Length: 246
Image (tube, rainbow, N blue to C red; front, side, top):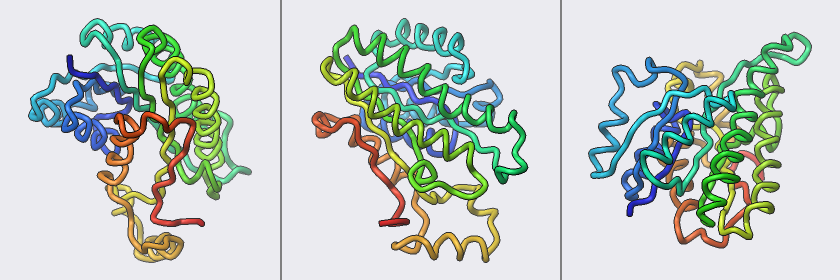
């Protein structure tokens, strides 16, 4: 029976790239986003199915435990197992510390960090624990490793994910479940296309390889961490940044 991967926040961007790579690897795919509109005029579902696997999408606000509970039950009922979980859902609401409203901080923590707790508890501590097998990859960020001005909420959420990854790896490892994180740096997306030439130059000046990363370079590392080749890798955070800080 084919394995199943559940990827949160996977209608577009890095999440969609991960879903496509895992479909290519032969996983059945459970996509997720917060609204039906995320999947309108969007070919990600058909693109995954083009690899000959089964794919469905599930609408859930992963910052809410009840939504996650309903989604995980539905995915398990549909596919039978959940063998891989990728916690990708995340947002930014940037602003300097002195001017950031409490609500802006709380929202980023809820979406980026609480969602990871919800999904690890339900999938890792539930489905995978009963299966005695599974792979979990959490999307952190270089902001969680080094901080970033104007992103105290985002940096806090991603640093927490790194700590959660290590703790979950220690708690679940004896049951055949690995838990790792990846920490992307500056990745080429429509968001980076909108930057001024001056902003781009400042960012690229920090990177040893002098270029942005591509979403395929994130999905390739995630694919490895979910594979049998990484069966003895757990509790690790792999930075994918082109050498932004060494």
